[in-house]
Length: 356
Image (tube, rainbow, N blue to C red):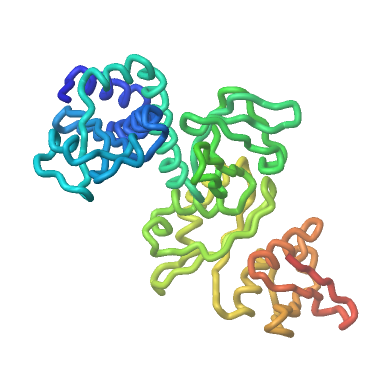
């Protein structure tokens, strides 16, 4: 059935709804098949092909040629099948195209439902693809509503999601209409009509993705972000590494006069960021992770349990531990090692233990 007007409408709908024409056709095909099957007691014999390139739509049922009819919906005798395929024999499969009147009747009775269902199918398919591509990425969302408990209802594409107060940065506040960057932690329900995105501004992945977006050498793979430890809104530690000895990974990420890291700090609302050099040598890595404190000695106590002892100058002990233990705690989280710290003037029993 050739119907240019039908395809003109489809192209307009696809553009208006922001979906691919092929996806819209697929959805309408499924909806038409569902409508036709109801005339055949829901037997799975109905088919529909919508061909945008040739502006044709084929709607047909497949029946089997049999010597004795057991099911009026699915079976044909050879003499009945002969009008569709001369010489048809039992066992043959016959495609019977529905005439224009039959398709027109379906369109008249169920046209709006079929079209709406087709559009929904296409939109859901687009959403699934769009959501899947955004997993563990940064997206910009618009604040639609602020709930009394502090949760934000945000627009992400054509759908709304929740940014829970627990996944927001302490001290930040937003108003309706604000555009904010969030990290898509994961996507669930891709097999359902309405996928769900878990959003966060407090996740360490947000910091890692900002490094990849803002620092060309990280984006190009010349410098790699090996680990991130974060206490959102306060401080992050980022371990970076370069396979090229001529590239200083820390200096590259900080930039001339700190310009590069300052851009990221601004995006995080002033959150402090320590960029440290990653090393496969545990002692070197742990010492670097405790920056800006000076470390005199690192002793690996237990490789299996990830325990090490750190000695720092007496004058640097408070700096190594940090405010409320934050510096040492982030260093432990970054390295995944339990850190026992003492000053060079302290006895063996004066050790401060820090775990991630």
